[in-house]
Amino acid sequence: MLYPSLRRRLLMGWFIAGILVALLGVIPVRLAIARYQAPYPQAILTLGGDPRREQLAAQLAQDNAALKVWISTGQTPEKSQAIFQAIGVSEERYHLDFRATDTVTNFTTLVPEFKRRGIQHIYVVTSDYHMPRAMVIATIVLGYEGIAFTPVSVPSTRSEESWLRIVRDGGRSLLWIATGRTGVRVGRSLQETLLRWM
Image (cartoon, rainbow, N blue to C red; front, side, top):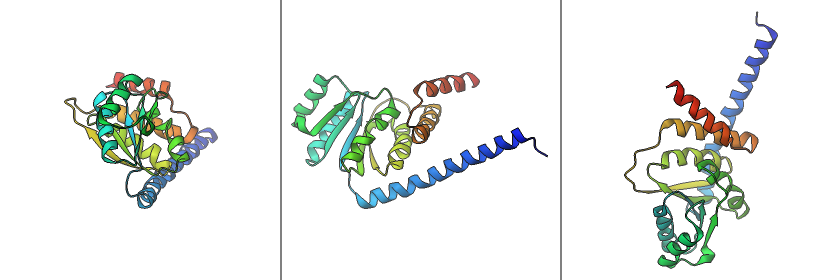
């Protein structure tokens, strides 16, 4: 016979697991619907951190005149403007957004803007070493919101990021779905704790 407190904890655990399974089941459906309704990207999201990402985004914008570009916490405004002006992309086509503090918030701060504009499919531009983590976050955050994405990698010489960072930010993305918060402090503490255990 289980004690009442243990029984309640088990029931709560099963309830939370059920919600996670339901959420994770909804995401592939929403991604498939978005990709069906918008088979081609309608905008470009560039994750800040390397000027080559913005250069590639500017080239994509030059090749796709209908697409607008969002740069999430990239170079200084002057450097970003110089990159886009050098390729001939007008200021009206790119948006600089400096609200993000990390990769999870690169996505969560701009999702409302994409939804407001009816964007259902975006290019996600980042470095190749960073792409696995960006794809996990994009799958959860964008997928939950019904926005498909096409990854575009910028080549680099760096090795891929650790699976700890990928798992941490995947968890933070799920937290954002559940609470509307990304748990920036919680995510960093969790990573530090996991590294100490290893």
